[in-house]
Image (cartoon, rainbow, N blue to C red; front, side):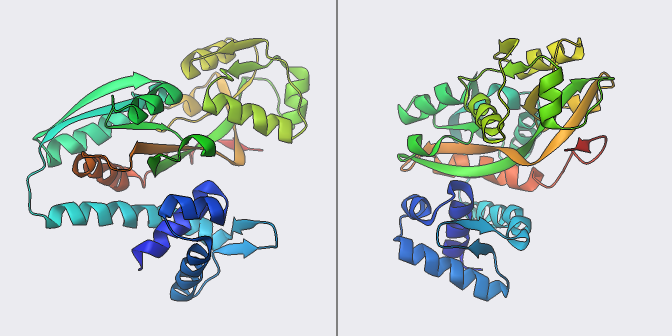
Length: 299
């Protein structure tokens, strides 16, 4: 499978346009289009629905995204292992707060087993703060929410996993629709200065749902705790490794097609790429568990 074609495929998926993807993979827009056609011919399937103004994934394309991400992560790991070197060193890794107790511990456990000589220093924070520290060379890399397109031109962004957004309601509030839910209950908002908070705000605006938050909190756990007390409803990402969707005091309604993307960002010429390749490989091997399948409703 052509690695360059897979890179172009994922870049178009994450950035939404061929021109933005071309900047990401350092090809011309025409070359990116050619890589996509080549991949479709190789697979014998259409991956995109093309119109004069847009490009969106087919159902087949959506199914192949996780596999493409794994192939690229394993490719990076193969390149590193082929050099026949013991991976050693110190890595300063920023981690968005919500990942600290969910997905990060099993990744660190795998790293400890596979690369005992790799020492990782974890710095927690919000996505915008961590990205700025990567740009300034304070951090070698960071695990963050997918940055807005206009702030990542100088960075290399590797997609790690997706987290679905969900409507949280206190039991036993009934649910008919998103619009009806927000009309009948106070809104507890996740901090709209964060990237995830702005994404939620934009989503509601696109649906024509105008809301005025009763409260606005900068912690997903705090937002969830307030909803558990029956003080309102909210929309939050279901953080991988967090079991809030099994809480008997909450009703959790998945919002189809609305996800938060979590990525590893690093400088393009990062001297620690051998070490960050280990992080990417660990995520790739742990990426297949879907803990959102049970106990969830859907809009």
